[in-house]
Image: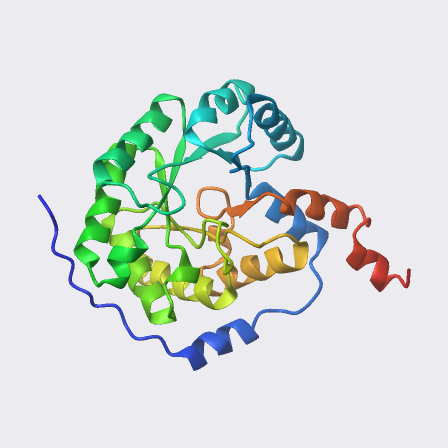
Length: 283
């Protein structure tokens, strides 16, 4: 049965969003914050040139660096699953005609079913932005709900592609739709367009999560993704989340970074080998 979605999302006060962002500490990242950020990464490779060999290397790196998960295309899930056997590393798969969502819903759901059959622990799906921007909120609600049915107990991360939603008001509406339709996480971006995660977008998403939690105690996760490649940027998202939702959200069941370059840069900064560290030491 299809659900008729009634939009009751509040209008965004951009001044209040800016105040929250301005309240984030500007102090340099601590080693503890960087280590925490590392433990929350979905180490990602979503390239047409991905092979079994490159994904095996990706999983080895994930194990060595103690990240939360690896994220791959459905055809490489089984490779990643075997490589991560007997480790705590989760295997996430994009599914549902990533990154465009421009396929019939039935085919997109089949892709998610395939990824789960191959061993995926988590599914990252992207909403239909064209439908959303045409005000077809019912379609977006129902597509997320259908993906959640397919996922069952598996985690469903819903990618809003915030850089294509045009306004913060739209980001809030999309966040509310995804949460109410059953998302376990809401995620900013695919990493495949020019505008990826931003602090204002994530702030709006966190406020939507907070409203849901205050309403019924349901905890929904957040995944800033796309363009986050250095410790200073990553830690800003951790601090913003703590301000709005509290420290309890800063653990893998409720917070992830989608990143490919962040791991190396975090390790370099913790080891004092980054350009930032060299500059602050006068090199």
